[in-house]
Image (cartoon, rainbow, N blue to C red; front, side, top):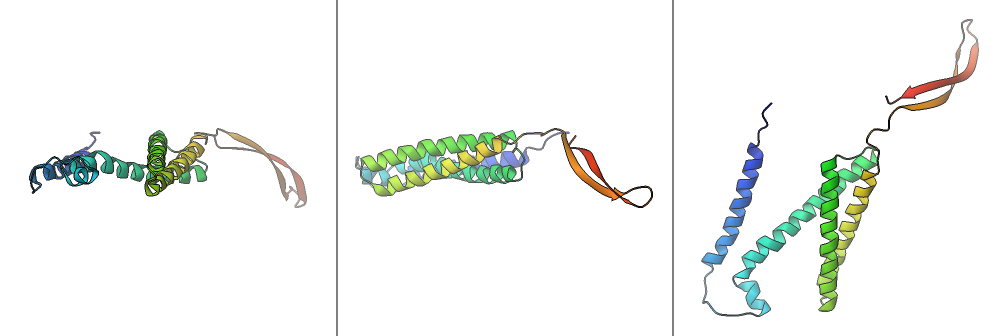
Length: 174
């Protein structure tokens, strides 16, 4: 059976189109050219579309991946099942990226006494830790528990209509 990758191609075309449109801001920015290397100049100048594409877009995508994989891994683990390998890997990678990025934001924020940046880093650390915990919880579930043999009490009628008590062996999950 041939697999249709049309939706993936459309996604890639859309991603490239977004990159091209955001990079067009570099070429079409009106204003006078001047050398301003201050923080305000860098935010308003030629670097802002690059910073947006290289930092903001991947960070938002990582948050979406983290939240989605945390929900899937947590729900599967809550049901006693092991999530698929793809969800586990997505959970591990997005959680670790979030933890590293959050720690970097906390260090930079506290070093520059910018507590808003440190607060964002703390939130990223908390999300990354929660995602990593849910992923580890889901990874600990067995893939196939195998057959289970249990001994259960049994009460029922005998051949003459009387009541009989006993024990029954039950084999389940094979």
